[in-house]
Amino acid sequence: MADRFPTIRLAAAQATPVFLDRDATVRKACRIIEEAGDAGADVVGFPEGFLPAHPLWFHFHPATSPVAMALSKELFANAVTVPGPAVDALAAAARRADVHVVIGICEKDPGSMGTMYNSLLMLSRTGEIVGVRRKVVPTVGERIVHTGGSGDSVRVFETEFGAVSGLMCGENSNPLLTYSMQALGARVHVAAWPSFFNRSVDMWSIADIACRSIAYQNAAFVISAVSGVDDVMLERIPATAEDRTQMEDARTRGGSAIYAPGGLLLTGPAPGGDTLLVAEADLERIVPRKIVHDYAGDYNRFDIFQLVVNVSPGGPPIRMGSTGLNAIDAQRADGPVLPQLTVGAVPPLLLGSEMQAGSED
Image 1 (cartoon, helix red, strand yellow):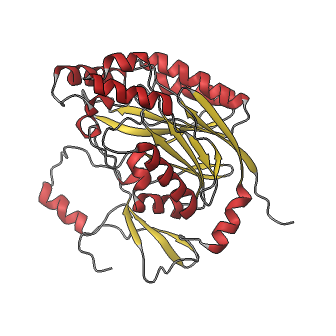
Image 2: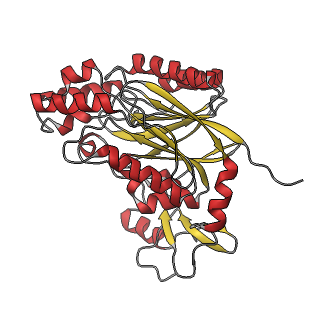
Image 3: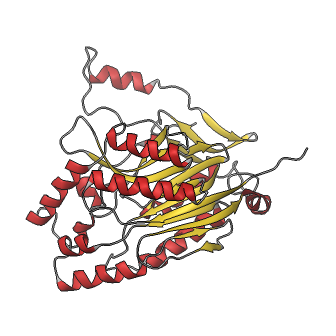
């Protein structure tokens, strides 16, 4: 009997967080997850930093201003630990709804008093924590409150219908990251975005170009989930009347969408306001795209091109031991051979836990 590939349902949650209120935003997210389940969705993607909010105030306020510092303190107080009570509530909702969830969170290190990551959390339809990936390079104002993820954040999430990848905002335009998602076998990609009111660029066009490019080059279905703006944000974030006008414009424009392999639009872009977009994804549509152009497979020359990715987790900020740092460095020089992820006989992506600087291999 020939292999068959299922048709699944994808959902993009265009939603506004309850600004800097973790518990209320968790409750809202749970309602959206259950709505996605009622719509028959297999995967629902949420915006970047949905829980409890994205640090958008740095577009308008200096980093050390009283307003920015006060909002940043609230962000940390309402950030999410993984695991933790907020994740437990989301996991229970995923289990009730029978849907895989990819949701943007501001994740905090439970042992710190200030370290945070811009993260995507994935929960399985059975309520298990599949994993967390942290934004590798925080963008502009995010760098003030977010630290970057390590190499172990170059990863995908496994499901019964294949791998799901997720990148945040500018990551969706990083060709090395998007290629990595393809090489790791992603069939569905979640592109998570904040509210679109950057004053210097047209984020609506950028998101559309980036998502179409991933859908085309990766031959993947793409869920593009954009955050929103509400009255509380309009009251608390702008510094000037011009800022407020910019945010009001973003409030009316929305932008979430779902794309098919090849870059064709399945649904959207949605107008402003909270909404749930749902579309069917026939995974067989990936096959003809891959037959013609499989850039992580037979439409590449791995004897010419290779991408090497250090997937080791970040080290502790301090190492304590009796051997001393010089001895530790010497041990590292004799690190392990890199494991390889291969397609056929040739690796499209080299994944290693230790990168040898200046190696001739």
